[in-house]
Image (cartoon, rainbow, N blue to C red; front, side, top):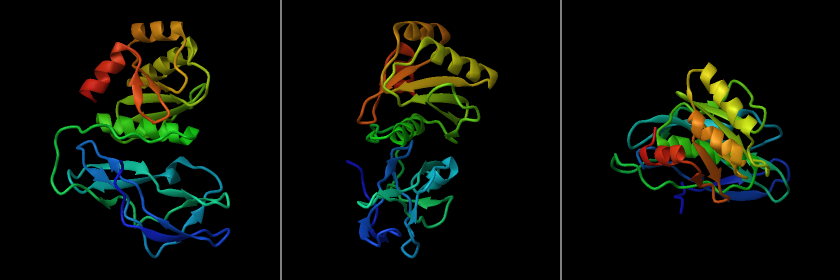
Length: 229
């Protein structure tokens, strides 16, 4: 179960309904929980369109000092408005454990209900593995959504279609041009020839279940899950 930060009162700007909101915490690579500090005096804003930079906030783990990007807190109002919750500054200290923990703790997944959740789940998992500077990839893949970290290119496919041979090859080719490694996350699994090709190219394959837990599909993914970045 996820730890929650202190609750704040949030008013929907569309219907004026009041909500009590507490931001969930996410596990840092060191194992300590990290939660964005909420601005008690700030106002929630309605999300009318998505922009990658606005969906993330930079926080510093209060336990190990690592700075990384985490999902910006949001709340769905019953009136249908998605509220972006005000955060007390960016690139700031966040909640952490009272003492550093050097060993990796069990992964805490993000439940997948939307395509954005799938991307968030993959990003949180990569961060748990030890990858840093996670962001949207510079090049848009032919299918799915591309995210990048330092030295890694990842593709997240939130569709109900199994990833194809071409999908895997395109990811690998793009990663080669950027001199980085690559990894593929799919909700619907992979075609047989895609799995065979991924093994020959050295591409770790994961399936995202609806709990948000990446399940290794090939040995390369097993090794990555075991050893981390």
